[in-house]
Each structure stands twice: as structure tokens, then as C-alpha cells.
Amino acid sequence: MSALSGKVQTVLGLLDPDQLGRTMTHEHLTMSFECCYFPPPLGDEAVAENPFQMQHMHWLRQNPYSCHENLLLQQETGAVRDELLAYRKAGGGTIVENTTTGIDRDLPTLRQLAKDTGVHVIAGAGFYVDCTHTEATKKMSVEKLTDIIVSEVLHGADGTDIRCGVIGEIGTCWPITESEAKVLRASAHAQAQLGCPVIIHPGRNPAAPAEVIRILQEAGGDISKTVMSHLDRTFFDDAELLEFAKLGSYLEYDLFGTEMLNYPYNLDVDMPSDCQRVKALALLVKEGYEDKIVVAHDIHTKNRLTKYGGHGYSHILKNIVPKMLMRGISQHQVDKILIDNPKRWLTFK
Ligand SMILES: CC(=O)NCCS(=O)(=O)O
Image 1 (cartoon, rainbow, N blue to C red):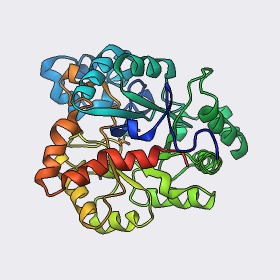
Image 2: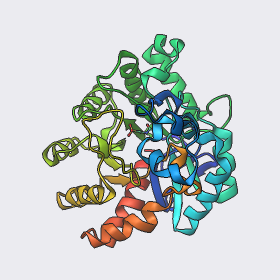
Image 3: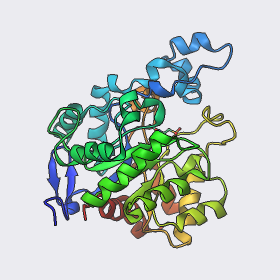
Image 4: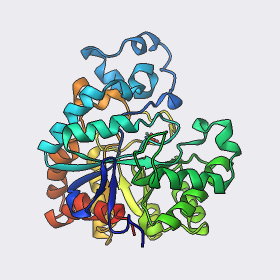
């Protein structure tokens, strides 16, 4: 039994799991999403140069990845601090901050935000998607990658003594690249050593989540302590979703607040509305998965902050919970989704 056993690890140290409270399991407080810049639609180049004006907010919501400045969440620490204070006021307790190597993780800022606001912040170990892997990372063995991830949890990351409390979000594309598969195996090995939570960013294809689970399982990972993120933009067929749910991971709907007509990374995808997300949660509850659901907003661009007219980190607590109750999810089940499931996932074995 390790010192971490039975505890949750935040950027300010170990915590008794009962202290977490309501938890968003997939957010970013400071990061860069420049790796995923997407050119604006033809003719919209001028708007993309200067979109932070009232008359352009709708454009920004529809094209969040087509403006370089919008991808620099790390420039908004003051606004994020205000948001976290509002999140606490709305009844929030904890945020899992999923920024990993490749998208500008900033652990000292996370620690300062946690100190300033009283929100518990849990940082992520490991690596994002292939295009952010350095040549050095791509050459590493699974053993070396495992050592790095284990060290980020046990000793601290990025040259600091600030320790990560989850592995992930571990980035994968579709198809999964060789380098991503190595990182997945390393994550499973690290999880087997540490008994810690893992969270995955799957590729944008309904086959991707199950393929990730297969790789993790073969490498000795604990699927019952693993969250599969972004199901909102990955499954569009109830039967496929329920088939995946049988594999035993936590099921995360984490793009609450994102409503857009054209999802640039996969134009075949019709991004669901929040109402459709709630409907998917109600289906999973009805089918017996209330102990497996977790939720979040995955804020990773500036336009989603309330400072810019966005929904902010309190949207689920303020607006989605009432909708869940209206659609037949009971208060007891809501508490499982917001409190009990994250707590169970985040507690080291
Ligand atoms: C930061 C991150 O990976 N967000 C997910 C964006 S996606 O469009 O759902 O892949």
C-alpha cells in the first residue's frame, strides 16, 4: 500500500476524497490549443483577425479554432480566477485540469489558482496527441515514457515539485499512431504501478474508444479506473454507445456548452446540443450506467469564458443540472454524476 492509497492528489497535496465535492472531470484552466488551429472559412479571414468584439461573438462560437488568439487560454489567468470563484459560489468543489505535455501545461499557475480560489485542482500527467509529441518523445521506449509519467505523479512535473493526480488527458487520434500507442501502453504500466486514475482523449471515430481500451487492457491497465472523454462528438448511435459502455470505463460527456453547426475536425460529425447531451445521459442512466457517468465543459478556448460572453465553468451546475432533473434524472443520480463517480475514479487504489 502506497502513501497515495485512499487519497486524491491535488496540486496543493493529498486530500481526503470526501473533501472533493462537486467535480468537473475534464477542464483546462491554462493551456494553448495552437496545435489544432483550423483555417477560417473562405472570405472570413478578416473577421478571424479581430473577433473579440460583440458583433463577432457568434462567429467565434461557430469557428473557435480559426482564430489564433482564441486558442491561447493561458493569457486569461485573471478571468479564470474570477470564474473559479464563481464556480465555488455555484457549489463547485474540484476541477480536474487535463492539460498534458504538448499543450503548455503550467503547474505553478494551477497551484496559484487553487490557492487563490479554494477550488481543488488536480493536474494531469502524460502526453497529448501525436502532432504535439517531440522527436525525442517519439523515440522513447515504453519503459522511458512510463518512468516519466510515474515521476510526474510521484515527484512532480516540468521541473517543479507539483505532482499530478491523474494520468491524462492522454491524446490519441484515429487511427492511433505508433507514438500514441506507446504512450497508451506507458499510461497503463504507470497506472498498474500507482493505482491511479487515467483519462483518455479518443480519436474522432466511433471505433476509437474501444481500440484505446483494448490497448490499455492488453498492457495491464485498469479500465474501471479509466475515463473515456468526448463521447459527445464520438458516438451518434445509441446502440454503439451502449456497446462501448459494456467495456467498463467511466463515460464522459464533457463538451457541455459547445454548440456549433460545423465541427471542423470532422465534418461528418453533427455536434450535439446540450439538450441532446442530457438525453444521452438519461439513456445511460436508464440502461443502468449511473455509476459510470462523469461530466464537464472541457473549456479550451477563450470564447467559452464568461468574460467573452461564454458559458463558463459553472454552466453545468447552474443550467444543466436543472435540465437533467427535468428530464427524469433524479437528484440522487445527479449527485452520483457530480460527486460520487468522480470521487471513486480519483481515489488512488
Ligand atoms: C483540449 C481538447 O482536447 N479538447 C477536445 C476537443 S475535441 O474537438 O472534442 O476533440
